Image (cartoon, rainbow, N blue to C red; front, side, top):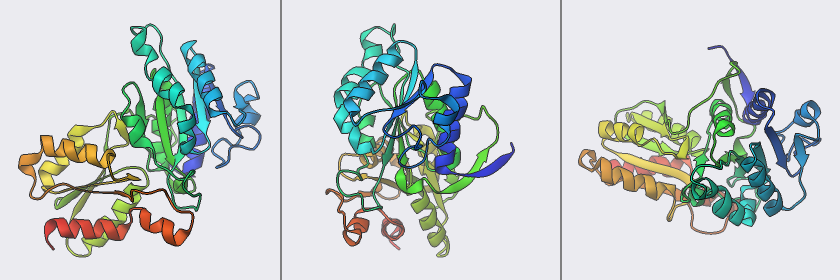
Length: 328
């Protein structure tokens, strides 16, 4: 399949453009998504192409326009709602958790809610405690919601197109530090990546790292360092937390005998704990050491870079964890 290089944010824009061209029920709403193209420029060119009827600048009223999106989805539209920062999803928890996630179940499947909420997540740019959170585990905990976390431009495009076509509400988390990352993306207009299909980003035999979003890049860099010391590390990217591809993860752990889970959300009660627990339940007999996990520090993200960066999982912590796990 022919490919070309593009930025992560360009892949996001292309996915939305193609789906809006394919399906007239798809529209985009959010703060500054119109002529300005969004705060992170993920929506550039869409207003000019589709106009104000399908690219709507919303006021600073997240509960309002997320509620509007739920209603539109219930009436056979397919809204893409952009939350400028994922932290702002907390202002629309009733609309997301009590309405979007439950309406299909409460109507016996008669009313679908095909909406996508795009959220910028993650720390690393001195945005401070209220604009740097990674809230994916909160929403993965809610039945009725799907949660996707792309780690490359290719995955961003393929997963976003799947999200927009899904008949269920999807929370689509984009690490804001990755928007200018460049990578190969298939040229095919109908390129999609189904939910619930993890990808082996790097094959190996000595240990498994399961990593999400930007932590995939961290895991791959750590694997390269460990390779210099003779360790062959496999890196698994789940790509979606809900649904979770358990089989790919378990197959890797059964092969390597060691597992480390890395996610940028706070370590306590998060995705690292859930994935580690499932490995313990379903691959225990294959483990040569307890499952280890690394998450962000359990504290509000500081504004000051010298304080902020130590809260985020990094390459050295991953390398050290693998060595400690293997007793080397």
